[in-house]
Length: 442
Image (cartoon, rainbow, N blue to C red; front, side, top):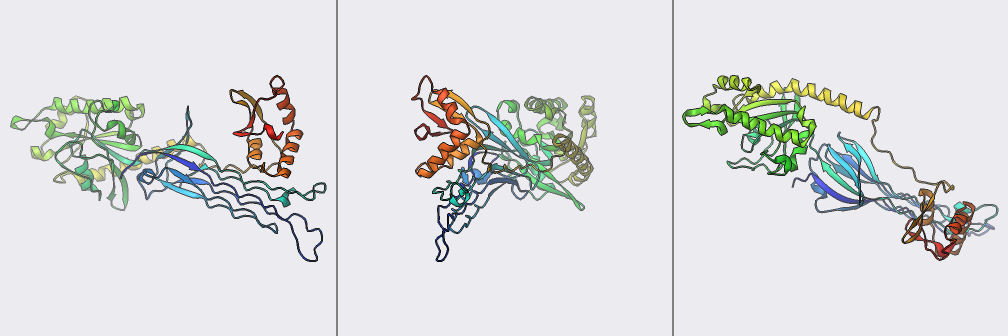
């Protein structure tokens, strides 16, 4: 099943909790705390893989979560880190972060091997051995593991092909790609037999290039008529376009060709391309006349008439009889190589010196709380701050020692004073750090 859009829920693995343990061995006096740290949660990683050309793996399954880290052990043994979850997507996939009221483009995985960490795993909690100091020799608490990052993301595939074949339905696009490559698209004598884009690799000597057969376009495609609104986006990623004109559509009695019909067909498709995206207006286009066998191969006069209408024909072929198709593939090769160089230069200029897409966010291990802010909301006072929220969610509020540590940190950072000032006129106002209500512990 071909799928070019998917919305999925991704979650990094939860970090393992720290261990609360004591060293008790014969002949070892005052062994002290020995709880190890929990393991890191795994990341969810998207990776472009040229061996796949659809998002169908995300059609039925929508939720993906990486492995959690395991809990720390006694004798200062650390927990095992969770395995990263790698999800493969086709090259040409864009990733968008979706929130309730906005969308943010995260990355465009254009090339095989491009990767992006979309949901980082949580940090493992510190065991009680981590908190031992000269003044706190018996820490009776350990941290919980941090929950992994949670995101709702949209995947959208725009096929990457060197050549895209466009035109009205039933003009011979599928027949052409079946003749010049090993692709086996559905071919029948009715409109819209091609419901999904087909990809094929064309071999010319020891070189090759990718050709895409895009489902037929009709007038109004840019507004959603036919299948155009679903597949016009794939044309954007093609290096060069083959615009096929069907001589049979313009054939009249006495084997006369209505050139005006060909001109009208050409401009109708061009109008839809231009309306859909300004980028398509400047994309290189080669016009190919198909079904030349209907005229015995003598189409020179038709080509001249079209040239007067400023429509330069690149080639005249008959895909069904394979007339002119081999020559066409050979003529396309230098054009394809030229466009590849142009696209590579454009991408390099756009991305600058950036060669690695993923930036794995570091786990926050600093003891400093960093900046935070107080917000007054209908639910109460909400305190925001990345390190403070992480510290809170990793505190085990069922453990008295952990609660005492939380209060101590809140007082040392000035958080208690800030909360008292904010609640001066309404001392019973609920207080949240992130999503956790914490006023009962202060």
